[in-house]
Image 1: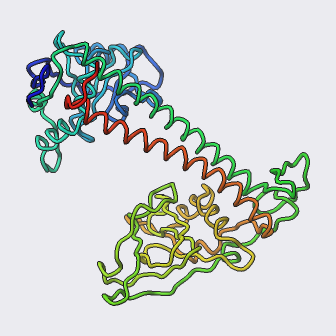
Image 2 (image 1 turned 45 degrees about the horizontal axis):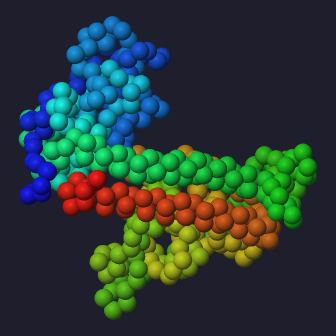
Image 3 (image 1 turned 180 degrees about the vertical axis):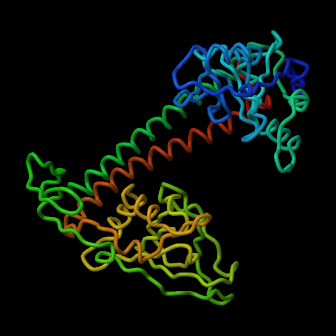
Length: 412
């Protein structure tokens, strides 16, 4: 690098690197909040600390490891487990104890902003160095002397460093706000689906209430009088049509790793000729559900014709039942818990059609099904817009990091 006003330094030239400490033998976390938190790698999230599931230690334990604390002006870096997580702790956790699976960069030189150092260590340039240091060991760990050898590029002006960190911090704030909004609306969607699939919608588009609408007792609990109770096999068929791959008649193929857990999203497909094993055929409007490890919540409503691994079950709605509602049912906690509870096999638990076919499910009039589907689809469009906005912000941050942390773009 040869940019005026910038220089290259190793971490060892600008700071000290010190490790954390495991709990002493015979000591454990306390069930109640104390003055001293114990920060684990699982708590290190996106440049800060997730305080929702913190562990605490007693005064007696703290006294035994009091020399292994981290402070708000230090920078943490994970060195085992998930390696290379970097960030700073919030002020309210100042003086917390740090796990032995992380290190702190401390006593940072006056000519270096800790905020800048935190973002610089997240750059591609530094993460490539970390990957090279760790290598492909069976139990990889980032040694403290390796951290000292990490090279970073930085402006000689602390003021410029702070401005760069401030710009990236603003984008981070927008990203976190968008993530929080998405998380909130995903919870709202879960509640909405619960209401729609247990109470439904009346002819005016209003979710029914037992105070204003007629309900009846059923094996599923109280349900609208317009509904009946059926088995899963009453509303859907298992499609058993198979496909033998060939070079002359290839299809889009979906494997288990192509379906994202818990979202119903398709990540990718492959050409069916890549693997010559027998596949299951599906068509547009079918619902796919992983019979292997059903707790992974891999389900998909397909919008094209293709094939999939036989570890995926293919459901097709029967007459007077729509695909989207079938797709909603397989996402519910009740359905997932049922398939998990009835699954067989210890190391590779599976469910099957015999189990799923006996799952009790409400039989909803077709017109009401359409209204329920439309309500969820509209909410999904809103969520998709929010996720698209998050992707834009993450792309913006990536571009800014490349420009600002290389000196290509200077901050006045």
